[in-house]
Every structure is written in C-alpha cells, then in structure tokens.
Length: 430
Picture 1 (tube, rainbow, N blue to C red):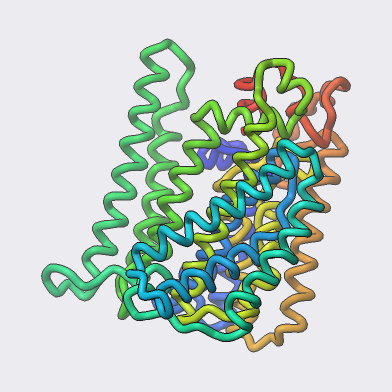
Picture 2 (cartoon, rainbow, N blue to C red; picture 1 turned 120 degrees about the horizontal axis):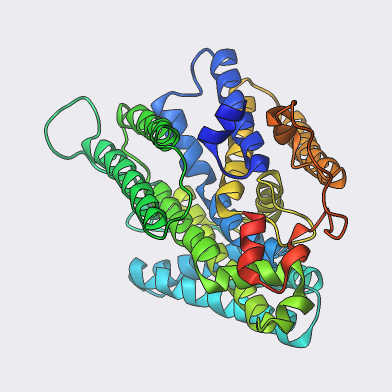
C-alpha cells in the first residue's frame, strides 16, 4: 500500500475519490455490457456535465474561503436568457454576446460580493436572495419563454474537434491533444524536479516519478483514444473545462491570491493580522463564482440549443455536492480544484451509469444523496479521530503506530495550526 501511495502521491482524501471513480467506471462497464466506455457515451458524459464541473471550480474557492453560494443556478439562467435574447432579438454577433454574458455575470458577482465582503451579510443569506432575484429576472426578461440560439453559438456547448489530416481511423486532433497534454505534464514534472534539485531540496525517487507519469499518460491517452475512435472529436466544452482547471489550479496552488483564500478560510482573524485583506478575498471569490456561473449557463444553453425559464434549477446542489465529495471541508480552508473535478466526475459517472441501467430518476436521486452523505460522513468521522481518511487508514503502515494529532490543532480545520504563515497554511492543506 505504501508503494501505491508513494506513486500516486497527493492528498489521501482525494485518493479515495479517485479509487471510487475507477471502481464506479469498472462496475458500470461490467453491468452495462461495455456501454459506459463507448466513444459516444464518454463524449456525452463530458459534454453533459461540463457546466456542473465549471461551477464546481468556482464553488470550491467559495467554500475554501468559508462561504457558500446558492445563486449559481439562477445567475446561469439569467445570463443564459440575456445572451439568447442578445443574439436572437437584438442582433448581436454571438462572440460579442458571450462577452456580454461574462460582463453580466461579473456585475451579478460584484453585487453579491459587495454585500458579503463590505456589508458583512453572510453569503448564505446574500446568495439565497440572489437565487430569488436572478430567477425572477430570468423569467421577467424572457417572459417565461424558451428562446433558441443559432448554430454558431452552439459550438461552445455541443461542438467538438473536427476531422483533420490523413485517415487513421481516429480523430487526429483529439490524439494530438492527448499527446500534447502528456508532453506538457512530463515537461512540468521534469522542470519542477530540476528546480528542487538546484536548490538542494529532497526529491522523490526517479522510478516513482516515471511510474506516476506513465500511469497518468496511459489514462489520458486511453480516454483520448476512446473518444477519437468515435464519430466526434474531443468536445469544445471539455477544452474549456481543461483550460479552467489548469488556470484555477495554478491560482490556488501557486499564486498569492490562492494562498490568501486558504488563509481566510482557515482563520480569517489570524489571516488579517498577518496582512491578508479578507474583504478583497471575499469579494473576489463571490464575483469569480458568478463569472463562472455565467460561463456555465452559456455552455448549457449552447448544448440545449435554447434558453428556458427553468434552466439552472438545482445546479447549486450539484456543484456543492461535487466539492464536498472531492474532499473540501464544511468549515472552510480545505479543498482543491482537482478534488472538486474528481467529485463531480464521480457524480457524473454515477448518474450516467444508473441511466444506462434504466434506474428511474427517483431512485437515482436517493442513491446520489446517499453517496454524498456517506462521503462527507467518512471524512468528518476520520478528521474527528485525528485520522486523514479511510484511504489513509488502508495505506497506513501497520508496523508504525500513527502518532496522535497535535492537541492544539482543530481537527475539523487544520489550517488554524499555522495561520500566521499563509504559505504554511497552503502546504498543510495540500
């Protein structure tokens, strides 16, 4: 087990979800007779859930900062109807309409960020009000009608990479994208290792790094080859999602703003004493969430070919569930972008597999609710016992008794152990 943990690395709480995702895919692949990993179904999972995963990226930052956002579905629906009307009734070219939608989303986020950060009203109340306000605006402006969008706009939600180059039996651009992704990951790992070696820091053994890179590359190329063998190439919505994951992963792990978000979520008062401007951080996470909600709304409208009065209903619950399943803490200060994506994929594969098995929507909701409850319950229980997670228990070296967690550290919020040094907070939370 220690060998596996050494190779996989990362946060042990997320490892459990990664193993759960692999187990779910294997189970449904077996139970559906191979339908889960067909090219069209994999493409459908990505396209059908990309907007939820985009919401999860913003929601994890909101939750890390210690807040919650219940208005994302309503903002997405409001922006969706504005963009649809701008294209259909106002004659705006769809690229300009996309920029308009981003701008409207930013204004919605600024409105909510103002109340949360500078007036001091809890985000739960502000976004609950926002959920009602923007839902009402959607139905008021759109007159509760369904507004279609043109074919050009649909590319951001339903488009995919075109055929290009010689006939190889695969979508060549999709394969090239996979190769480029693998090359970028390997180059990044080598560059990081070279920097650590240069400053004399400890580095992992070479075989561990190369084994991990080989596994990651095999998974990426496996998925790309499945998609490339179908009628369509890699979806455009998937490209948008990958770009956002890379960008926000960098923000959370490498930028000062990301460290400040963790610090504020871990202990706001201590973070302020160390120089963190918590109001600006809170304003940013709320505004950023609305911008991503506007993008998610446009992706959904593009895929469904129209904007309707009931778009976005329940989206906030899907995004919140993805974040908590992915390892974020209810108390804030803990969570990762990649973890929220893994959590969202667990829900997406579960939903898709149950549909393929012909399970009704009623029982699907029950199963998804139980999965969310069990995932969070395991995490809360193990943190209350001073243990990392169920996966951590399985991987623990039984010959070495684990020391008890330091008494001064809040088990539900370990970031409080080092709030005076924000960089240490980030390192603690992974």
